[in-house]
Length: 394
Ligand SMILES: NC(=O)c1ccc[n+]([C@@H]2O[C@H](COP(=O)([O-])OP(=O)(O)OC[C@H]3O[C@@H](n4cnc5c(N)ncnc54)[C@H](OP(=O)(O)O)[C@@H]3O)[C@@H](O)[C@H]2O)c1
Image 1 (cartoon, protein in one colour):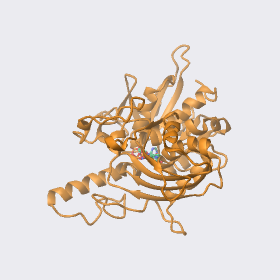
Image 2 (cartoon, protein in one colour):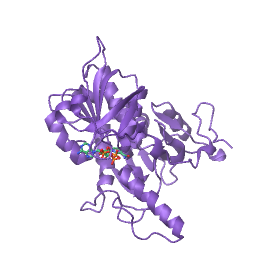
Image 3 (tube, protein in one colour):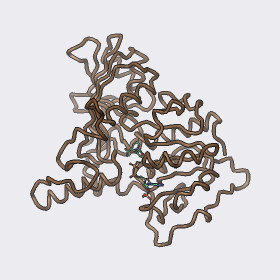
Image 4 (spheres, helix red, strand yellow):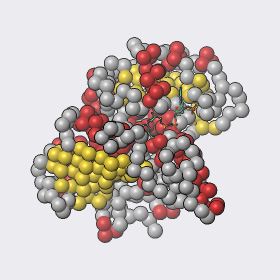
């Protein structure tokens, strides 16, 4: 059987035969090969352009991480001219080599002096690392940061290109990409706001373990293996990524708790959404749940609007919005699932329906690859937007 599409106008869903994958795709996603050679020193990285090459010198920091690898893929697929590429890391990836546009590039130790000499730096690093790296890069390259370090800083544009691309013009050296769960939500809220006006948003997220990085994926894998091999539930976490075992479990707790009982992850959804949409008073509330899925975040969203929405019209509004694909046909069981969207660059919407408790309510099921659409594609899209505006040049 093949996943069926809801209508000819909608994108085809993947084949059922793709699941389960022979090996988890997160293991093979990176165009990397382990190298027996010692890490090359930064002094061996050549940043000189060839002739009149108009390309940019680009660095990816954290290139060997989950997001960094997808940034490399997204950069490769983009039309951005890249004349020189610097890939850096910290420990695990240093000394490995990664492919980019037919050439192998070494992953070297992060070197701020080298980063200052490129045109654009894409940071796929933990927030505390981004916080340390950005100040010494000031006045140098354009920095696009995927971490939470600067997202709510008023001087830093927080950008989803399809929603508020022109905001990149306000940059003073750094542009932030939002949290993965925020990106897929604002991409859907934006066109609905234009058409109907947003009144209130209630969201519950079902977030994959890859949202917590590589170690979290290893923890899920390890707990599943032990559970199946022993035939007994794993009751003690086999890693530090989560406070409880995540295998065959759900954890209603992502990031630290705040004083009012919400988590920081939930407040990212609230505060980042308001900033990106330019709606500082938008009533919005969130519950973020970690689920035992490797890749792909899902969200159940209730949107209350000023104008009463028509469901068929809302589907059309979403389907014609950039970066959104509607898979929504209940009779044929067509709706997006995390396993279907892994490796895809769009945001997928299904289960669009009226809120039976309110004439102005619309319910939606929204799924996206958190690593690709929720981080890498967005970061490269920000760089493309800045390049097309002439804000960064080779
Ligand atoms: N995962 C998601 O779904 C997602 C979505 C949106 C945004 N983000 C953000 O993206 C960033 C990266 O997340 P991730 O999931 O890719 O994590 P990850 O898989 O753990 O990768 C982190 C990367 O950072 C590198 N690194 C660590 N310390 C460093 C240092 N001092 N200097 C240079 N590089 C250093 C690591 O290098 P080595 O490999 O050499 O150790 C690794 O490549 C985080 O800020 C995260 O919040 C993640």
